[in-house]
Amino acid sequence: MLLSLKKVTRRFSGVVAVDRVELEVGEGEFVCFLGPSGCGKTTLLRLIAGLETLDEGAIELRGRDLGMLPARKRNFGVVFQSYSLFPNLTVARNIAYGLECRKLPRAEIAARTGEMLELVHLSEHASKHPHELSGGMQQRVALARALAPQPEVLLLDEPLSALDAKVREALRGEIRELQKRLGITTIMVTHDQDEAMEMADRIVVMNRGRIDQVGSADELYWRPATRFVGEFIGRLNVLDGAPWQGRLDGEAAGAGEVLAIRPEHVRIVDDGGGGEPVFEGIVRRTAFLGNMTRILVETEGNALEIEVHGARKRLAQGELLRFELPRARLSRLGAASR
Ligand SMILES: Nc1ncnc2c1ncn2[C@@H]1O[C@H](COP(=O)(O)OP(=O)(O)O)[C@@H](O)[C@H]1O
Ligand SMILES: [Mg+2]
Image 1 (cartoon, rainbow, N blue to C red):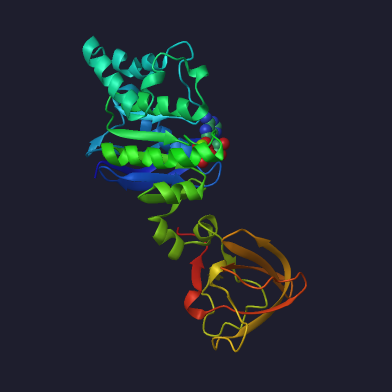
Image 2 (cartoon, rainbow, N blue to C red):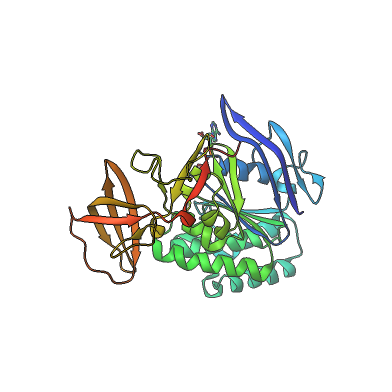
């Protein structure tokens, strides 16, 4: 393992921001820390960077404890949400900054800066200042600056969240490609599940300072370990209301568990049905989203979301809808993995 986190803990005046986190990151991996605001993503990233001190636990790089190593000696590249470029320096000087700090020979600095400019497609903007560039370009400069000293690990804290949707999507692909080409081990913090699912080899889902689950996008979507993960990755109907109880025979959830189903797995019964218990509900709302329609159905006061792909006759508000919750599609989720 390249990076090992062992019972990593950080408290702030009573708040446990990061709580006994255990994680291994392999060489060349792209890992995302995903979770809602305040769950401890930034603190964990800063602990790895050495910008924050551990209260307990250890962080190791190739088996070597990083505890006593200050941030500037870790050779980790860091990019934050705000571009934090030097406004008075040109693009080239910004990129060269880390190399100048390391007192590399002039010629080497120039060559490496040129390489980096090319890598992020900004060669013709080398002598501009940050304010002359768009947000997306500035973030590419920040990326080039972080990569220039050939860091061991690249750490990105919500690098795309200040950008508008189009630029954000384009940069997702660009960062991912760059990462693969360089083979650089990367950890990116995000609160955006789509971003994490599109970019990461492995996603670390964080919930109140702890890790709920680690897995590929597939694993998290199809086999969420907890209700929190199920609800955070994609959309999920939790079947804990009266209409579902007792009707889903033999599928009763164990203590502390809930039954759940994804909206796209609810089967609308137009004819005879698939031989499963049939439920009835009233259509409360429909939203046409192009590639699918999302239907909100109410059954005895309980709301259920259904997603239908492809063409289908329009449903009117107040219409009665019959549907099945196929057994094979139900999942049983624990409240927490701890
Ligand atoms: N420097 C700090 N001082 C006090 N509390 C902090 C500090 N940094 C983070 N926290 C708290 O730690 C928790 C996790 O914060 P953070 O790591 O920023 O979460 P995220 O990046 O997931 O939004 C929050 O409750 C936050 O208020
Ligand atoms: Mg944060």
